[in-house]
Amino acid sequence: MGKWATVTVTDKQGRRYSLDVNARSYVTHVVRNPACGIPKLDASTLFEVSTEGKVLYVEVQRLKKWIERRRIDWKGPRGYLFSQRPMLE
Image 1: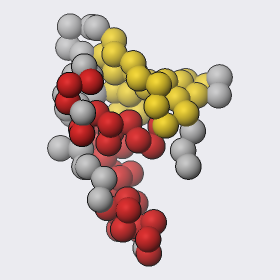
Image 2: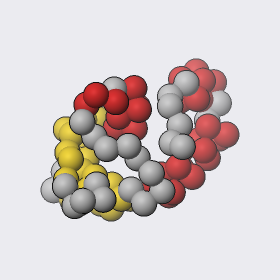
Image 3: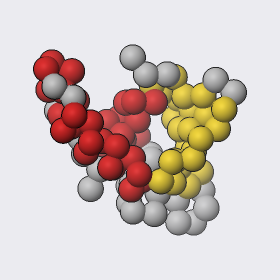
Image 4: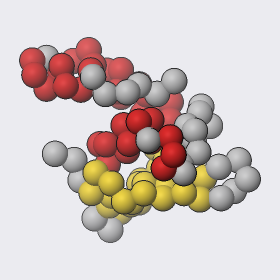
């Protein structure tokens, strides 16, 4: 199970949007719930992830590569469940 975190993205006008979620479920939540108010993720999206007193910055392209790698590497039930999650476009 992933860590709980505050994940923040900033839109092109500089407005910040944050969600307190399980960090591993952020993309799934945003893609499956477009009415949640988070702007659509695109190639310029930068995630600010605050958890356990640390702040990490993750570029959307880096996250996309991580997801793609996990879909190939993870086998069995874990891999199957992960492959069912939405993908970043």
